[in-house]
Length: 396
Image (cartoon, rainbow, N blue to C red; front, top):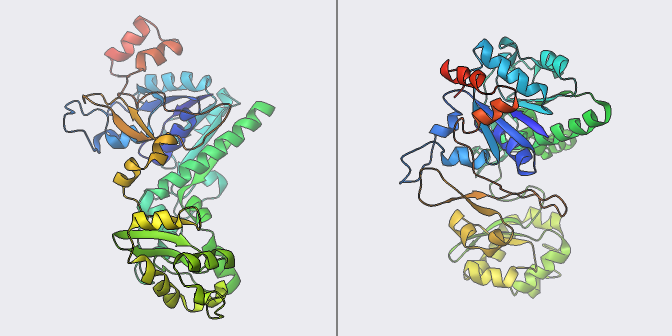
């Protein structure tokens, strides 16, 4: 599977990296100045080259890079030749950009009927329904805000809070992968590709779906409720002697097990706490009962006690993740070369584990234009023809 990656920053690169992790040949087409994230850091202290930031490294591994001036006619001709032999194109430009460059889906699909063309935009593409915000630029935080996620995240009903990771980009990236693979299956069956339209706000809403059913069924507008669940109890965060942990015991069985663990057998048949609905009505009391025990024990002690008995997990910072053998055993911390630095860096591994065709981190993210000549030769630009493109600053 050959993918032409015209994306930058996070949503699109994350999508194409997943495809690359699982064996797709991903040709990342960058402007001559490179993807913006190359400049955003962080960098190793000994890295004087500063060509590959931590941000760029984290979502561009397993790809090849060609730097290409798409504002030039010759640059666009190079891209068209690459797309003619591709299975998929992925872009996350604002609506209309590709059309103005003469690279619309309609034109590309005429040249390559089996092409799958995926577009990731803040509010989707007009081809599937023109949002009143179709022309608005959007980043992660916009997706989180307007997709409903921030509206139910925060310490209290009046304080919406952004989710830490860039899920307003990452979630659309995942949905784009799904759309591309489904379209690829159809293209290989019928010989016809299609346009895959992924709106960031739409994707965040889809993963915040409980706000839809709560409002539709009850008429109530869900608000931020801190670290507790609005429908399950206990299901949240409690204090330990040296930090915080999460636990979940909303079913009758897990609740009785929790009572045994915290040495409160006397409450096992108490009707005030016997059922999840009753516990919800008294959730402050329930959490106080649990914390009376957990506050006197360390996270390590509670891990030994709760682990494997009830749904439970200490809240980790990244140093805890690096120290926990789970992540090494599962190959979720992988070292790659860092050009400009004397030592390798660590990137997150491949979370989809497949028995027959496992994905893997094969190599680091590319330097800008690292594979330009190789890609040009494959597209038919060899020798003098390639040299001329370099000389006239069409490629880098």
